[in-house]
Amino acid sequence: MIRHRNAENVRQTANGLTRRTLLRSSAAAAGGLVLPPWMRSASAATSAEAIAAASGAAKVLVWEGYENAEAFSGLPDVQIEAAYLAANEDTISKTGTPGSFDALTIYQGMIDPLLHLGRVQPIDTDLLPNRDKLFSFFRELGGLSRDGKTYGIPYTWGTLMVLYDADQIDEPQSFDDLMAPALKGKVAMPDDAYAVITTFARYAGFEDANRLSPDQLETVMNLLDKFRPQILSIAPSYGELPAMFARGEIAVSLPDWTPSVLAAVEAGRNVKSVIPAEGGFSFVDSWMLVNGALNEAAAYAVMNEAIGTHAQSVMAEYTGLGIVNAEAAAGLPEDIAKLWGYDDLQSNFSRAPLFPGAPISNSDGVTTYQDWLQAWTRFKAS
Image (tube, rainbow, N blue to C red; front, side, top):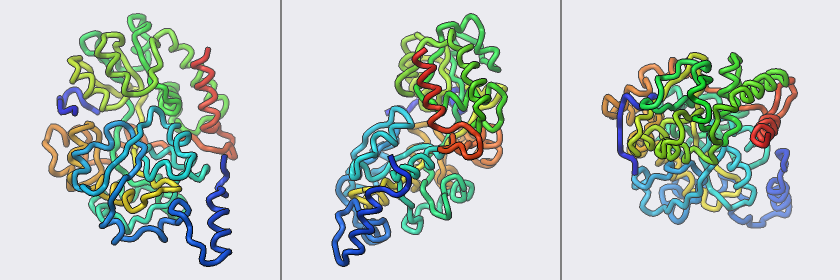
């Protein structure tokens, strides 16, 4: 378990009408047929009483560390069985079989793709009493709702930044600094199409970095091509990036997040973070309820515990990320609390915007998430 803390180093096939829907409708028409658990709606299967008595396995798909045992010590009767994300797209590829997972965590921009494919279902926020403890900013965050229904419960948040080994280079202030000849072959990236393309859209000067026309996406990919000589490796996961710092293989990783800073520092490297002049962007990782959940009561218990004061305090220390529970934030040590500016959350997100994610359709002439994935695949293969 990572416990190191250095305040100076931390800045931080579906179209909506799924087989499940059709079977549910047919069963209802037959009259009196008892549905298996994965075909029941949340409202039919879950109640406050059931959540209070929840037990057994809660199968979750999360970023490694998000299932921290200490954070969920208040649920002794629920066993969290975690599988881990290596990339955002794993939320799609790993949730295709109903019953595989009860809940997952992912950033706000994946709601539309997951909803389009019928992989997530609305969350009854009345069944989450700890939601009242959230900062109003997160409780009212519109990006987690669609058509008046809530699909995401905020858990942690942060900014995608540039990390650098301060023993090897000076703080890079801009994209031009990242193009320095001394950094040739000294930069690593995660295999994360969304994060990389959004980052380079910011470097290219596009303020609306998730709404790119075909010409703008081409500009972004051309900028990535220009940057290619700097890249030593595209890591299969964020977890590999601090290991590359630890081995002395890289001087920079981008885009990267706070847990990598903590892991690299724990490994003895003087790794710091910076948002270049062109800007960064933020994310809110949220809990979502998976369609086909076998243990919805446990999933709700996990989500409610995750946003409780104890779990949020643990996650602030364990990950170094921002948290969403106002009570927990008020109780943090000063050096941790000041990292994320809880007294002015709006300013944080003004400097590093919270983008909605690449769209799933091009009805307004912009490129889609699928276009981004294809462009990224071509970049990696070339």
